[in-house]
Amino acid sequence: MFHKVLVANRGEIAVRIIRTCKEMGIRTVAVYSDADANALHVKLADEAYPIGPAEAIHSYLNMKKILEVAKRCGADALHPGYGFLAENPEFAEMCEQLGIVFIGPPSQSMQKVKPKHRARQLMRLLNIPPVPGSDEPLLDSSEKALAQAEEIADEVGYPVIIKPSGGGGGIGMTIANNREELRESIKSVVERGRKVFGVPGFYVEKFFSGVKHIEVQILADKHGHVIHLGERDCSVQRRFQKLIEEAPCPILSPHLRMKMYVAALDVAVALEYINALTVEFLYVPATQQFYFNEVNSRLQVEHCVTELALGIDIVREQINIAAGEPLSISQDDVVFQVCALECRITAEDPTRNFFPSPGTITTLRLPHGHGLRIDEGIYEGYEIPPYYDSLLLKLMARGKTREEAIARMKRGLSELKIEGVTTTIPFYEVALDDEVFRSGEYTTDFITKRNILRKLEERARILQRLDAR
Image (cartoon, rainbow, N blue to C red; front, side, top):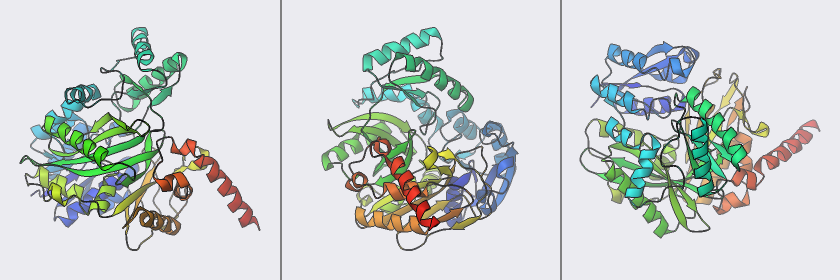
């Protein structure tokens, strides 16, 4: 087993990885930017080292600096978390060359699905239909690329979605409803991709509204064992980023569920994959069809909702796999006996279209009690830097039934108190009460279709009137 693990990330995911390492008796090393000198992951790690200025390109994306720290402190393994360098095959290969174990897939496996068009090509070979669209990335916003994009959009039909080829997590994606919007959207996506990911390329795909976003979690070890950990429903989204996740999906039939499991396992086997993998699908309830969306060769933000539903520590399994150990569970152990929900609490104002709300946490009261879990990256007095993702913590709840899990989540939200910044807590209180969410029939257009933000504004006005009395 490893002696010392460097966590090449920040925020709640760095804290979450450090906690599992501590339980396993592994020393931990944090890295931090100038803006994160007082961050929680820095305080909890056994050792911590600065890696550069606040901007991620000079710190958390600085491969050379991070690996210099890893060698200097004697780390024998590195966990990338999610985002930043987690799906960068060059970084994984650099770790391998330096003799540092990358806690994730081998660089060769990453290269098979990065860039994303390789994953689409693999799906066609496996007879798994990808979302209709471009099978190769278009490289820039030149007139030639714009004309090619128009051809693809005309073929699959509007609306279409433009995705940065170097991106992930819904960042930088834009919808176009016609040719005029397409050209403007491409220019925006190309510029954003160049700045955020260092890659100006993009894809054009058919945009489906009113679909379920379903993903299947896979674990694979070095001994040939490959299992699924069931599915997550991640359909409550804003700007293509997930807000509520639950496991299992409340509406999938056993037949469709099994077809998705088999498809995801086929992907892992075809890739000769090792470690944690997530295969995402878009499910169209009206036609009962599903399409391949993307492969994520990393730990997902929402991995913990699966952990809560199944009683499995995915990060511990990742570490054991990387150390050459076999999986500690078999496929027969994967049985959903409870339902679990997760709400991502961010420093954003949902009444202002989720506008960021950086600041200092002046009051923090976390909920407790049976069936709740919190993965946090904050503490009272912590100043939230404006340079990174606005995620503060993930609140999770489980129950013997979905209704019990929802009730427990509502109780947790009512007890959670964060002052000093505006948060998304009120959004979840409204969303969880919505009858369509309660039915489980909600889709990716849930927020707009159900007028959740308008209901939230009405609720805020009522509360203001009550406070004024």
